[in-house]
Amino acid sequence: MSRYWSAVVHGLTPYVPGEQPKMDNLVKLNTNEHPYGPSPKALEAIRAATSDALRLYPDPNADALKAALAKRYGLQPDQLFVGNGSDEVLAHAFMALLRHDRPLWFPDITYSFYPVYCGLYGIDHRMIALADDYSIRAEDYLPQGDDRPGAIIFPNPNAPTGRLMAIADVERIVAANADAVVLIDEAYVDFGGDSAIGLIDRHPNLLVVHTFSKSRSLAGLRVGFAAGHASLIEALERVKNSFNSYPLDRLAIAGAVASVEDETHFQESCRKVVATRDALVEQLTALGFEVLPSAANFIFARHPLRDGAELAAELRKRAIIVRHFKAPRIDQFLRITVGTDEQCAVLVDALEAILGR
Ligand SMILES: *Cc1c(COP(=O)(O)O)cnc(C)c1O
Image (cartoon, rainbow, N blue to C red; front, side):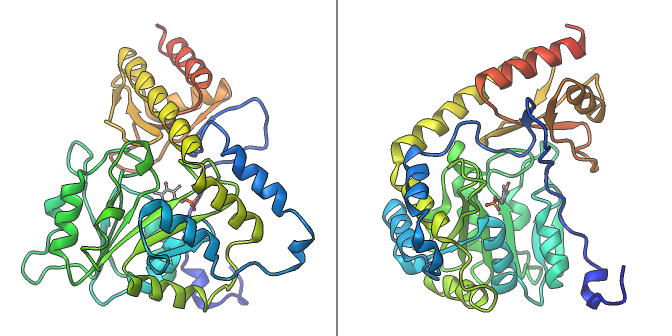
């Protein structure tokens, strides 16, 4: 606290990201990074962009990246917005599109950055409880008479549960709320879900946000994007151009374009993670864990006989880091990022030892 702070700062509750320990030889399964590296073509493009041209500002509109994304997703460039990680894209969306007199609706168990943005921008919100099986119930997001949202946001698959909503249910929510923006945060959709990007031509109130941090293995480069009707994109551009003209630097634009163009590497590396995930789910189930169905690159699991915090602490003693949330209803769960086959084998061996199996 300081008397020099702007008044709003006293009331902020910042997001706490998963730990990035400064230690080697850890089995790091706590922040949903991709276990395999980015496209070699992306690395090559970043090296090629590391030149004297860095004295020049980058393209403020990142047109090359919008063109590559437009081609990949069958969109027009004016249906795309790019930013410095999807967290920045989301922040601009909260400001530009989700701040209304009526409250913003989102699940009570979800990406914990959403309430943080609400605090930053003073957005009234309603947190809607997940079903007993930890799924998001589409019915809960349909307007009931005058009880309707100012806007809606949720991840699909949801985080930290990994549970996927069927695309037909997503469209039901979007169609029933034609007067409100519905933002689908598809950070994990490439690991087994159907994207809602295909719906944006039919629904001018739908915004879909993606990140390069998970499925494209470029968390360190900080690139994310939004797809939606051109008028939604214009609102994002207005906020962005009132905030920072150059969110993507030259290296990020070059690396992201090459990543989008390397479809083979993208498909192959996601397929490997999905295969490892399915094997890991079987192994943990055999150890007695209850594992929620996951369409993401992480799983959410609890053991009926062992406390979640205690399991996380025992794993940490063995240099294996997973994420544990001290929050109601989920404090018995571990969120475990799908690592390489080798990392998952180390995890399973450690859990066997801890459980005395
Ligand atoms: C990881 C994640 C993000 C943020 O991704 P960045 O692009 O790295 O900022 C956004 N939403 C959800 C649900 C995530 O899990």
